[in-house]
Image 1 (cartoon, rainbow, N blue to C red):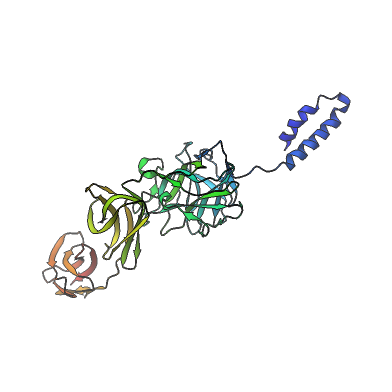
Image 2: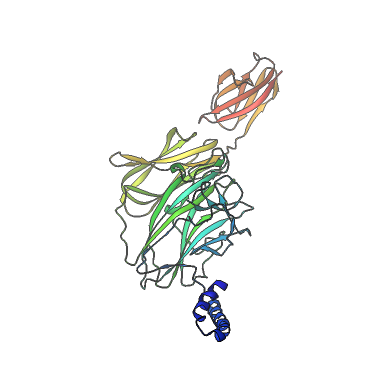
Length: 444
């Protein structure tokens, strides 16, 4: 406040010396009154008729210092964060922390920053929101939006693929938006702008979020109507997902708005909006959606146990050529035990093809399998609800000492172990789908 008052005081000191002190005090009082009564600057970003674009790269975040960014407050013009917990910090980080918090991600010493978080039970869930207001004098009818999603940390090897989802809402009142990170009421989701973290089900640790393998450009045309004077709020949501959350972030946000209807670009051969996989009971359900299709013959559903060698497990017919949205699904009725990786092979009518991104799930097979007796002399019996095709007996060094083919149709199998020496052994049972089950027993 003193600096603002001194600025006005400078114009008052040209009076005669005998009145300078009195006038100076009056000027100080007047300028401070003006300064205090001036309206606060608006938090929202103005979408004007001449300035038709907006960018934010978050490079104004501090390199080293932890700063305060309370839930519901604006740290950068237009940018507000909402939290489900009471923490109010923005922490600089290079991916080395696994604590639930709001993070200012970037390499140590680098001015290239990104806005991210790790959601958790203690740290809560987060949304990063950008508030804009239409001041063009006309209705905005379309927005080109792009941003870069970055992954700065893998939590641990048991955590699957996590996401930052994207939503928007329109209102005549800037205070009427639903700001709860736990609720999606009033928001419209844009699946094609969801950022899927590229690294999962692998050893945890820090990543370089600026490396090409750890980031992805997300872009879409939002066909919407924002009347003049109305507010548009964009929301990136980091929910608390299953297992410990990875460190995900957003960067390089770019918007361009249009007051005339924007024609959709010519459709790609097949424009895939999303592809997801989820465990449901003893099955894995795959769902995907296309925004448009051109000469789409079919989708081949492929599965892998290691993420590199894939096999076909099914086929779903396409819709040929269409600009309509189409939903697809496939059920893997006999999923692999443990981690499974899925992808789509999209095949055109001329037999050309492309592959989707890979999604992964972790399925824990619930099988009734009993090995008895566990301390045996002559025989070991196996009762299983799943069809088994092979049994291996290994010593504690992993050497195979006994191998026996099993009939898949039999619920009870018997292994002759009389030739084995006394000691501890591992029994490996393999079913018709290549799934392995291990048990231990002692030969007396």
